[in-house]
Amino acid sequence: MSHRVLLLGAPGAGKGTQSTKLAEEYGIEHVTTGDALRARKDMETEYGTPREYMEAGDLVPDPVVNEIVEAALADADGFVLDGYPRNLDQAEYLSEITDLDAVIFLDVDEEVLVDRLTGRRVCEDCGANYHVEFAPPEEPGVCDECGGDLHQRDDDTEETARERLSVYRENTEPVIEHFRETGDLVEIDGEAAPDEVFDRIRNVLDEE
Ligand code: AP5
Image (cartoon, rainbow, N blue to C red; front, side, top):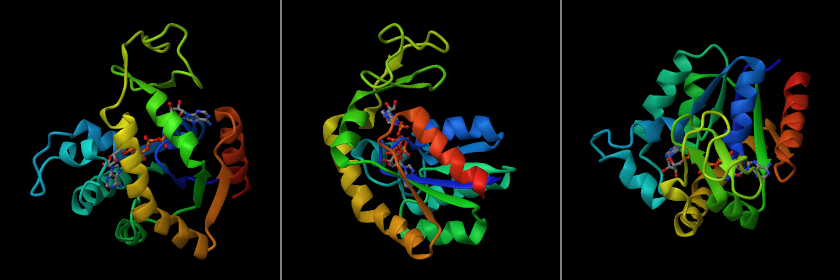
């Protein structure tokens, strides 16, 4: 069974949805740079605050993100890594600080990604993730898990979502290509229903 899993995919591909389930299934840490940065949005760094980059759909500078990931992986006895690496320099840094057992890529068409991002709603209290059409809560605007209010992420407007996809194409697709060339990449159709995507990932990990 794999314990050090890298989950790659475009914004909205389902990395957060699947990582949460994998962490629970295998008893490993969910290390997500997106959530870590949202929790530190107003942290002052020599490059400014993460908020400035995130709200524009840009990447937060590598030194800030590398430090977060290194600390999180040092504490983790098994992990699913979500949102990192996002460029080749981050991929190089990751290879220096850990080994990976599995690299999985969730493949989803761009127009599907935009629909998923603009329809996503997140619980303000517990972070649970919904979609107004594909995974709606029982009561609109209210979290099934904890009763908290659901809100739209600042970067999930159509304009910022498209900018994030363009940053992804330029910076992160070369990372996908890198792992394809090393022969480590396992590609999974991320357009199936969430439970089906999860079963496919689990099949890959259980074969390791
Ligand atoms: P981050 O939070 O990592 O965002 P992202 O990569 O853009 O990914 P998302 O969280 O938007 O999508 P996801 O793939 O997790 O999809 P989800 O499961 O939620 O990063 C945000 C920002 O932080 C970046 O823009 C950047 O500024 C900064 N940052 C983060 N990491 C960085 C790094 N390494 N370096 C520099 N900067 C960094 O699903 C999306 C929606 O679709 C949900 O509503 C869900 O319910 C629905 N859905 C999921 N799966 C399915 C399915 N199979 N069928 C139908 N609907 C589905």
